[in-house]
Length: 386
Ligand SMILES: Cc1ncc(COP(=O)(O)O)c(C=O)c1O
Image 1 (cartoon, rainbow, N blue to C red):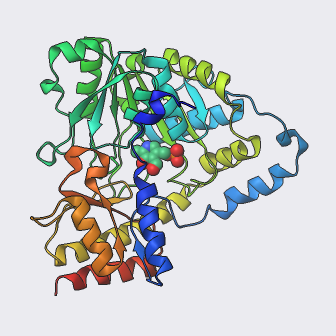
Image 2: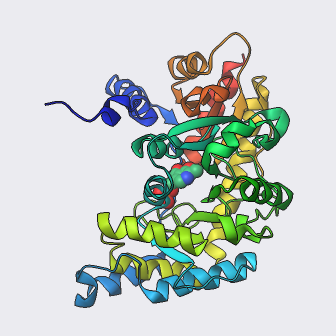
């Protein structure tokens, strides 16, 4: 049996290799501390789970959901965007619930990319932007992200011929893996660029609520004219510790939302309705649980940054996201340094090169592990210095 070329072209999924390594160590009886995956260790808040418990008893929620979600969920999303970002959305044309942002991002490529089309994708980045492009038969033009540029793409350096050919530009702030943030000036410039070349903007924004020291990340849709060219992916996964429930949303340009809805309605049957009701509860109820999460992550961030600085690594404390992005000492590749940490300290981090060649020289550490493990990991890292 010959599988499709797109399967042959797939790189190994980064975390499969890392999980293999962790399992090997644990099988040898070694107590491994892992900073690898950005999956909140904290449980889904009780008031959100309560809604699931009652909703699961109602037979109306046992049936196929609608692909475009409950109108009440689309309204809750629109209301949340209004109160959080002062952005007005039409719930019937500009909002689409998703089975996790990852699903929406993957399917979005099918809406924009024909074989041979170009997508502008940052490097380093969450891998789904380029994989979705490849699945749709398109080509990725990489936009290097550099520390000197605040990990923002340099739009002026994109060759004119490439910009003319491109169909979409992907961006993600607060950023995974670098923890960088973008302000409204950047998004204004991005909108002007997209309009000049008739390119769609896809902004992946699942970390806007995980921000520290009082910093409040902005939405792409706050930029002047963004609605004409842009779509934003947001998720309940990280804000409400709901990665396991799979619920997120796309909001923005009605043409892009409609295209995504048409793709999705042919491929999936929407979010289980009881989970949609959990999402409504999360968005409409008190947001204190999000503040509580942020407080935990901020404390962990400070502890980890301190430990890394002690062993001589250069770290800028992130203003947002769940990740600390640390420059590794000279003389190692990021994969070699990650291997050293696991061999010498039984600590797992993600090599920056796993997110693209411009991630080389860095490692990513996630803040989503219980405090006692984080403290133990920080202690082991700090001890490496001596
Ligand atoms: C940048 C980025 N986008 C999207 C996702 C996926 O989010 P969801 O759980 O909503 O699929 C993640 C998850 O880690 C992420 O880091």
